[in-house]
Length: 478
Ligand code: MCA
Ligand code: AMP
Image 1 (tube, rainbow, N blue to C red):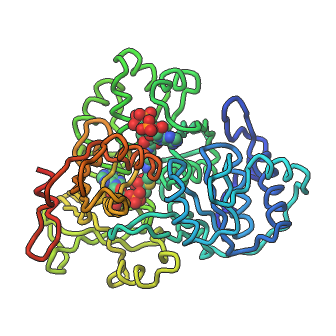
Image 2: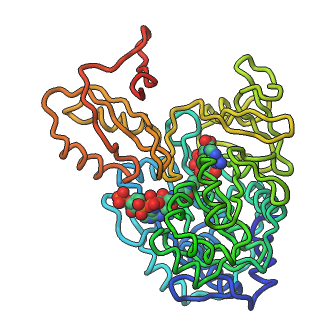
Image 3: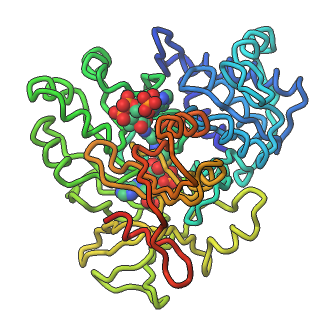
């Protein structure tokens, strides 16, 4: 089976049930099914077949879902692109994934763009029925760009079966049902919003209130009007929610049965303060783009602050020490993962795929320990990855950009702790002469997604290096 066969529990089986609200528009599962049939017919009429790629550069919207479901029905591989990415970052993905088209709300400079509104208008005249295309579960469903542990952006190929395993796991373990109401403001271009949010709701038949994005200032009113039962957030959002008064927080939490956090470490203090204000113990879990969800605190039982809980069903987890041995209790090592949730390959990168696996396990690059009662605690990463507001930043990408600029000789980027975003990027630069800081920031803003723009530039005469020439980032961090 492919994931559409599973979504059909709702798309067909709950035909008349309300599926989604978005900016005042309400659609049933049957309407989502019909709209995506029309879009699939339209894409087919443009020559799309199984295995072709389609890039989506869109904020959360119903049209994203129409296109996404249409691609899954056709076996076309969706390549979602972070809406905050700029031309340079989009071009890298387009050159690598070689999609047949890039869909966006507005033309992207120097990138051949298909405009979503005209596609949707044309699709409205297509047949509402779609002749099923047979695709099995190992068919790629999406290529999601991420940098793994090495720092160069690679496309993780996720199959229908990977997504199916994730949806079945979370629906079972977090007891997601058709009675749930999910407030979904996380971006659909990342797996947190897409696979945990949208997929699980479509399989279970839950209702979704979709937001273009989270604007924390508006959340109180949205909670009170929608009365969600389920909420998924990154730690930055939980920090923002703590700005509510206790009385408002209690009201906001009164309809909710489960708050989940992931994508970055949730400080135990935030979890405690949240319990105090909202009266809920946040359930923290751990995942990656390449593996979807791996480890989760339990729905029933102790949700232990600072830990990510136990391996999810079907997921094998090993902690491997620096000597290559399996770690004992409380012994630190790298997390290795095996299971039906784990991706099959990086797009067009057999070399990177091979080095990402060892003995059939994916090497996550995340360090962890396990307690004697089985709770896993993440201890940081092997790589230099910076996570800001739940978005990943690869220092090397910013360093390479800075060093392409005429005025910069050398650059090193590190993450510094930030109480709201978790981490923020800071750049150390060795200039060729005088530096115009404002101009430098403007150049970064024009080329990089806003969350990657260094918040500070620190000018140095030279970067501290080891005898072998490697920059000593730990010294810079200090
Ligand atoms: C943030 N901004 C956005 C969006 N999110 N712009 C458009 N669409 C978005 N979705 C921009 C804002 O314009 C602003 O830009 C800056 O980011 C910060 O916004 P602000 O309003 O101050 O918000 P915040 O309080 O910092 O909160 C931001 C956020 C956002 C809502 C937490 O960072 C977010 O949605 N993060 C989720 C990322 C995510 O889904 N990660 C999952 C990856 P400017 O600075 O120019 O003003 S998947 C993953 O990691 C694995 C698998 C896992 O385990 O889940
Ligand atoms: P991504 O590449 O966007 O899939 O990000 C995956 C990375 O996010 C993981 O390798 C972890 O480093 C981090 N991550 C996800 N969930 C958590 C969590 N609960 N605590 C700490 N880090 C997390």
